[in-house]
Image (cartoon, rainbow, N blue to C red; front, side, top):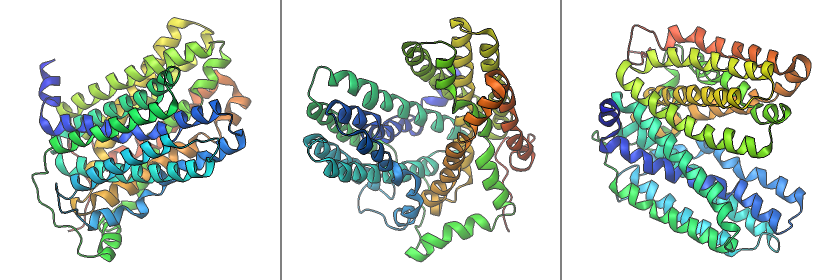
Length: 413
C-alpha cells in the first residue's frame, strides 16, 4: 500500500486521472449513447450504421498533430493551452448536439458528431503529448495507468450512466449534463502542472511535419520498432475480438455478459492497470514488458478452460478477471514504452503515429477470428491465440532487453 501511495500520490501522476477522464468522456456521446438516442427516436437503422464513420477522426489524427506541435496558444503553456481550447469546444459541441433532434435533422446531428469527434481526437493528441512531456521516467507506468483508469471511468459516465439517466430525463437534458461535466474538466487542466523542461517547438510547419519522421526513422531499427508496436498486444487483440460472442455461445445471458464481462471486467482492468503501473515503477519498463507479455499470452488459456468446462459462472468470472487484469498490466507497460520513444519536440506527432499503428493491429486482428472459430472451435481457437504473442516476445530482446531496466532504444549519434 505504501508503494502505491508513493507511486500514485504525486501531482504529475494524479493529474493524469482527470485528463484521462476528459479524453474518455466524448467517445460514447458520439458512439453507443448517440446510437441509443437515435434508436429511441426510430431513426432508420441504415442511417445509424452510417454513423459509424463519425469515429474516423480518431484514426487519422496524426494528419493534424504536427500543427499542434508547431503552434502554442498564448496561455497555459504549449500543451495545456490546447487542452483547454479543445475542452471548451467539446462542451459547446455536446450541448449543441443535445439541442438537436436526430430524427428530424440527422445530417446536422452527423455534422455535429464529426466535429465533436474531431475535437476529441485533437484533445487526445495534446493529452498524450502532455503526459509524455510532464512525467519523469519512473512515473511513465503510473501515469499511463492513471490515464487509463480516468478514461474507463469516463466511458461509464458517458455510456452506462447517460443511458440510465435517459430513462428518467429527456435526452437533451442528459447531453446538457454531459456538456457541463465536459466543461468542468477545464479545472483538471488548470490544476495540472507545467512540464519542468521547456522545449522549443518546431520553427515551421515543414519542420513539424518532417521533423518527427526524420527524428524517428534516423534510429537504427525504426521500422522493426513499428512492427513491435503493432504486434506486442496481438495475442490479446485476437482473443478479445471474440469474447462477447464466445460467452453468449456458451449459454450465458446478455445480463451475465453485461454484469461480468463489462462491469467486473472494467474493475479488473482498472486494478490490473494500477498494479502494472506500480510494478513498472519498481522494476522498470523493460522487465515489465517481458513479464506482462507472458501473462497476457497465457491468460488466453483461461478461456480455453471455460470452453472445455462449459457454462460455469466461477470459471467465467476467473477467466474474465485474469484476462482483464493481465491486459491492463500490459497496456500500462506498453503506453509507458511508447511515451519513452517520443522526442519532446514532436511528442504530439510521434505518439499519434505510434498509436495509429497500434490501433491498426487492434482493428485488423479481429477480421480472421470468426473464420478461425468456425474451423477449429472455441477451445482450440483460444489455445492457438497464444501464438499471436510470439512475434512481440521475439522482438523484446532487441527493443526491451531484460538487463536494462529502462527502455534501451538505439539512436543515431
